[in-house]
Length: 140
Image (tube, rainbow, N blue to C red; front, side, top):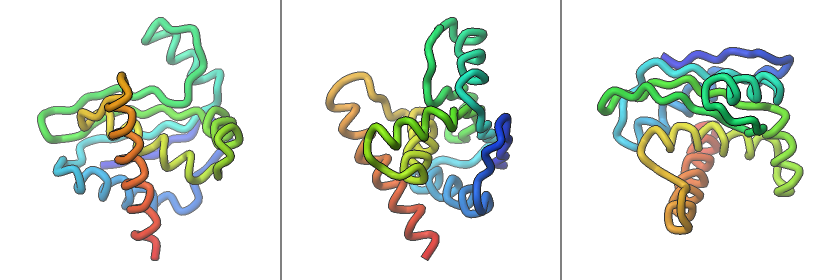
């Protein structure tokens, strides 16, 4: 089951469409949906999570707590809407595209994709683009 929580004023438009998309992202990688919580928050909220649980004193756009059990994907995925907006501006992209990228990025990490070296980063970006396109196909 996929749940969406808000710790900020931001609200997803058409949350059921995003939930359907998340299910498809997971299915296309041959995994099953477990309990997945997306928590949308602001920078300070996510900084607090980063400090309290990961002992990092830095801002970030996403923190994923992976509870995967075999092929069943379960997680708490925290996303800073402020970071997503700033990244979209920095990369000269749209907020929606950056949000989809970050949402898929967290899932892809749980599904064993990494971004530690150049080759991994290239594969991660390819997979992110593939999953973003899936959202747009699903909506047509």
